[in-house]
Image (cartoon, rainbow, N blue to C red; front, side, top):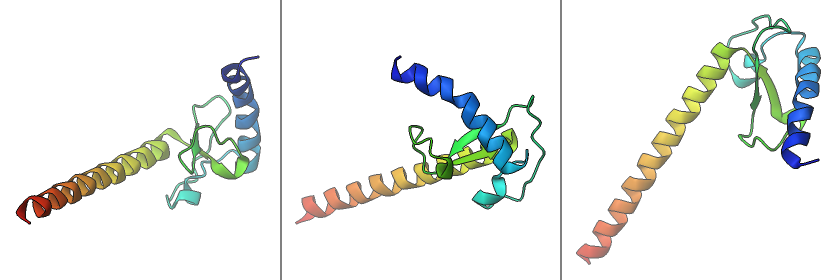
Length: 102
């Protein structure tokens, strides 16, 4: 069995375990969000990897989120990444300006 197939086959099991652990509620509160929305099994909750590594399916790294909370988390991550990129570019420009002025 290929690695991709193994991972894909394990997602329903992960979802089931997370659903039980969360009491069928959004775990956004674990990420500082004020949400405990009910998550029926036939809904479309999303499994979020807290450390950002989709290969780390350890239960301590997984959070079950409602679509609304997942959007908020992704938006916040995108903003942090954008700010980090802008900071990196600004530092590179400053460094090159200093190097050419010496």
